[in-house]
Length: 347
Image (cartoon, rainbow, N blue to C red):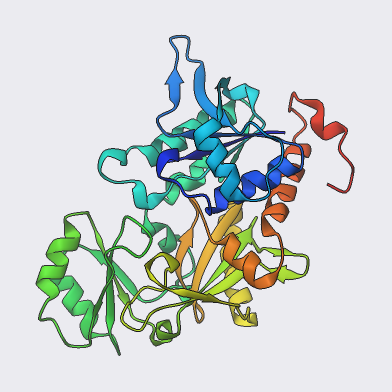
């Protein structure tokens, strides 16, 4: 299998990202793995699409750190046309989709659309990603699994919404990720509300949301594959994120810590209610952020943290993802490359 990873910008990626753990796993199983940034696309005058892709010089690596070092420093660059590859994984980072790179996310979606026309398996599905271009995607799912929410730029609407909440309120931008621009507004305390709304509205619409008290205990990241909770070797790909006492966010990159997740029947029921839409939208790998029985966010562009789940559960979840990808490629009869016809049936 020839596998291509699309990211926003290779030069700002990090070796411990899920993308490179997946790449190491794919390489170890005998596949050819390429990487590209959003800026590495050329559409020729005859409408052929050529990408400048980079691969590592060796066939095995002990970890993603040495892999990523070789990729950046000693990588082999090739010009590929889309029919040359079997699978394209779109993993653009929404937190980078701003400023000078605001175009990158939609360019990945367009590349995915073209690749799919050329017979390439594209994950996650570009049409599904287009629906999920911002946090409004969550509104397409059952109301019962979402915190009480309004989306607006009007401060009076937000005040009216807050007046009917039993507790505090969360404000956050509709665009972006990684916990950026999240504010807690205490019950009946609107002293700074005008300033917060003014600041957030510069970036677009604002999500006002009922604060879930259980958030003080952190949240749970549960990975879903093809709409189902991702379980490999008897373990769920999941972990808890525990926040610092002085920070609303439980994201690891802002000081949050991790712990083993206790996947409850309640969480599995929530995941089951999401499955029909996720399957319909072609979401192969998704990171679900849960607090209690509510979904806070659905991460579909570059769900990360598999290393945290692996560390806590002692299971190589990256290998499980690649095995599932292999099955997808094998089940698609129109692929030109014969590699899947000679692989063991246990793959």
